[in-house]
Amino acid sequence: MSDNISDANTEMKPIKDLSGFVLGVDENNHLDIEVAVNEKGKVVLFHNRAFKGPISWFEFDLDTNKLTFVLDDGEIRDAAFYATPTMAKYMQNSHQILMVLIDHETGEASDGTYVPLIIHRN
Image (cartoon, rainbow, N blue to C red; front, side, top):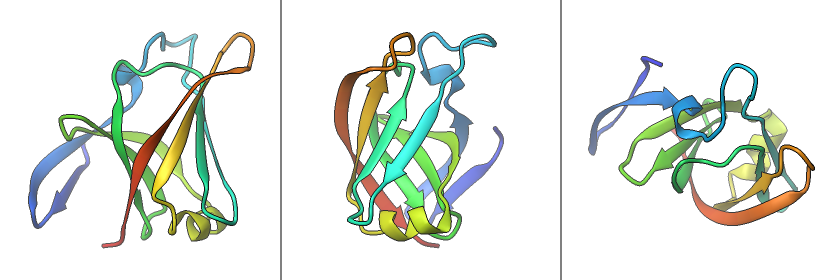
């Protein structure tokens, strides 16, 4: 992806998609992501493929309702996930996301971890 982001305090960084950061993904084995949020702002992100490394934090933009993944080195990965207006309303008070790895064969949860969530508006 060729889009760039900018912030007055940071340099321009390219935004890449998640495809190169996920284990076992190819044209026949896709990464499936589903996000759920309740009225109290508790957010869970379900995914069916493991990532090659840890996600350092998530960023959620209230202007675009877009969720992005940020890696340890500050690299930004686009999940192509846009929240509905109702989801965004509840997410704006969240401070973390529970990531749950779902076994792609059995459909059962196999791992879960909390990751910080940063909310911003341009």
